[in-house]
Length: 319
Image (cartoon, rainbow, N blue to C red; front, side):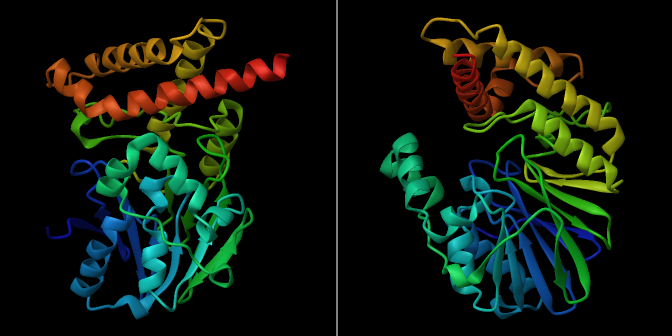
């Protein structure tokens, strides 16, 4: 299939990674002259689409200087190794806690295969390709990337994952947020704007750290947030309290199940669905409930699993 992508101006392109359905996951190309950086990569299957976009722009793999996954969850970094293999001039920029998994992705692949099965993993994610350690930079908070004179700054932003970083582009004043600024699928946009929720995916959900990360991003006074799920949002000040409210609501919902017996994940999943459907209902989304559940099925499952892991962690701290 042909690559689907959108020119956002300022040399930034939003590219559909073609994971599961259209406009579920994006990655971004940043161009400054003849130099290119990718922020997030999609999966192994996405990489040919990225090569197609480069060709459309009159560029090639040789023009790619940086590959920057915001974190190592597979919808964001699954294609990083294959992309680096094709782009011999590129350096990988990644959070220090994510760097070992990019150099040796065997644990990532084993964990994902255990969840999805070998056939499911191959269908949706392909495979993970190791990256030579000498081509990997473990970026600390405030690390500055020079893209042909254009300044991109890496910020440590835990909360969704402890290996998460966001990248701020000084030229456009836009911030590439991965999952730190939440999820806002386009199917749920109404006259009231985007509907947003916090992805509490396993295994390192941390509400307090997440709020601190949002403080850090807000202090940059960004013109826009460029979400992996999905696309550009510009009402940063309007959406910020909604994302904070989602973090708090999901945390409160989970804490009610802290001492619950086995079967907690299924209970949490249905409660997450009910919370989201109530919020969506207030926004006038014109979709049947069955369709909305189908669109949110994967996220509800992952959110419930992540909240369950968080509760286990809290229980261990108390003991």
